[in-house]
Length: 264
Figure 1: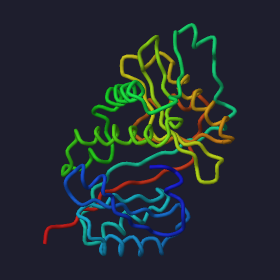
Figure 2: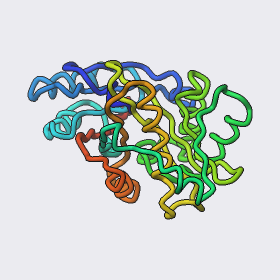
Figure 3: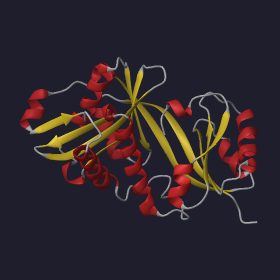
Figure 4: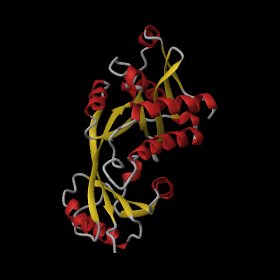
């Protein structure tokens, strides 16, 4: 979930038609804004969970608000701990390309000029390979089909390409796509956020991920953004080590739970 979408000083609820159609039950989202404070947020969260009609609510709040777990549990819903997202940041100026290393490793960074078949195939190949079996908040819930969680990543990446091909960065080794990042620009124009990023499994561990990040840095500079943001589940230690090596630092954490409506 983008950092922009987590901002605010209120508790908001919205429906999610895309997720509802994908998983076959009504799904909504509840977000406790990053500027919310206890205990007002706790009361508002409990009320939102009790009043919402959806079968499943994906609920997110700033992890620093430690009483909100109890507030969710005090509602009429069954609460499933799902994940904790950690957010990292880096000054755009830190992410610099290394043309000599790219050439030596026969790598190439590409930003598609159009949502063409070749770009779509490359995107699909990398996302399917790098996110197969990945543990996220969907896979924490036994009511949801784990295979459809991967479909969600594919749809998310595909929408980025369709909406704006410039929001996709591809990394190729020789003629094969091996890495992808999808992007969004923050509302204030200062942040470029990586929504989804990964390398194919067979190419991981060779130090090539930094070239994908450097490609994002070039996009950030072209857009006049001063900061690059990225996030992942807290258990994904390996990629966070790679971010640290590239100069990223953690700055935020968000808790996710699934709040299921109990049978009547």
